[in-house]
Length: 215
Image (cartoon, rainbow, N blue to C red):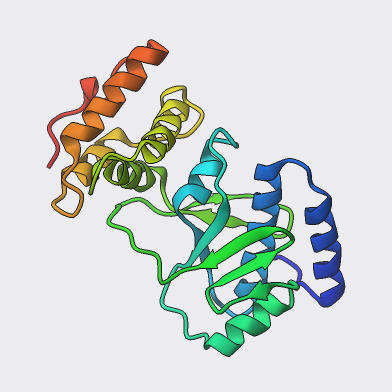
């Protein structure tokens, strides 16, 4: 069981985070600290979006901020959020703060259509939960093509697909295709096109070769 983060431990953690020179490790440590503080109020946070992809790709993609969502509806008031983030010396609010030069966004309850659990990373101040990579990949592909072509999202999706194809991140490709085919996303052809490009570049077999048709 993780020890409570008293003010002294928080100050020590903030000093360590401030001294960290690796951007991805700095973000991971900060996510761990924020999650630990909120966990003491029975609120579990999940890292989403580009921030989660940064951790999955081990810095191959670096997010400009840290995006986190409660795993379930949280009954914290704006004042309580300010109190918790204030313990970290944060500036701003009530949904976006700056902590040690990093912007932290606390968004609404996490949205997911995946049939996969959140992943969990070990980190210095407690575990960090991440949205599953299957949904993150499909989200990035969607953003890369709708409402118009957006190359940064496409590059982000390519990097996540590449680490999965190399075996660095476990990816359920059947689940990826199932999500991509759902009407909420409806980007299966675009997903397959992106994957074909990445597998050609890496010289890997296409992950759909061994999969049946999407449901």
